[in-house]
Length: 292
Image: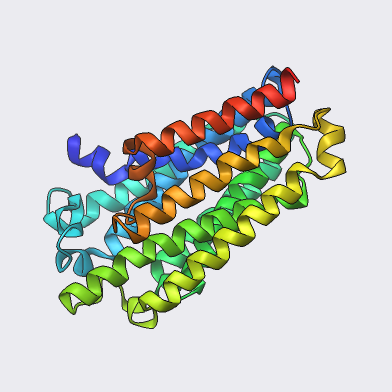
């Protein structure tokens, strides 16, 4: 059972919290009619994402066995057979369909987005991740689909700026993760991925800098947008930009100085500084919307 849980990676479900962003940014956290459908969407995404993880480990089994860390994954180590992996993949996908019945009238919109996410990620695992730049863009677009699903489920229209921020932020995190692969390749002489040879530290460092800078600009544009001010009824959201800047700088420090950017989820679960920054950002946002 432990290996099954390792295969479906419940820790990675943290990524699916992006479906709650429309509710959070829309100031609708106290509206059960908006929140409950998003909760169902969250669980749908968790199960479907786990189905993708199963397929990914099946496709990458040979490469994982040659990797110093990934060789300990359940399928690569032989703890879970490929046949069991396929069975679990199907089961997780079917479980992902169940929460859709609790979404309400927008269930078909969420279902279409979820299906698009699933097809995109199956293509990513099978082929697209072999192409540099395409791989990180696909990952970032997957988070945009999470955002869209949350918007449809809660019936909250999305600002164009928050869509751009989501894409750029996750693109930044993806480039930071690829940097970990490049560092390992330069240290060992072996490319962890086929597309790693199309990256180097100079390119990755510049890509990280560019995406971080544009992310911050887009976020500031979001916070001062008249549309957002009118929807939230607050003129103080721009203050949260300070914590976004600090968070980006901290993540760049972890990436460039500590060289530990291989797993963004692990960083968020273990780095106290990042946790405090995110907490402070969330509190400041809530104060700006509900108190100020």
